[in-house]
Image (cartoon, rainbow, N blue to C red):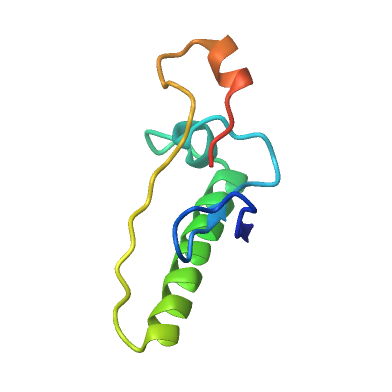
Length: 89
């Protein structure tokens, strides 16, 4: 889901968050071709959200609107405790 957080400090800031606990990109989307149907759907949904929000900004400003994106996720070092405490967004 894509929301505008109440703490937004940048103009037009949005936050993409999942409805389930996903600690990092490998867990969310799978790796090495060993992916589940759910991981494929999550990646497709994530891409659709990015495409949708960027298209809305392009249409709002009638130009190719520049954007930057950051990803917050758990370390991908295999530490299970860190993954359980982190949330990908």
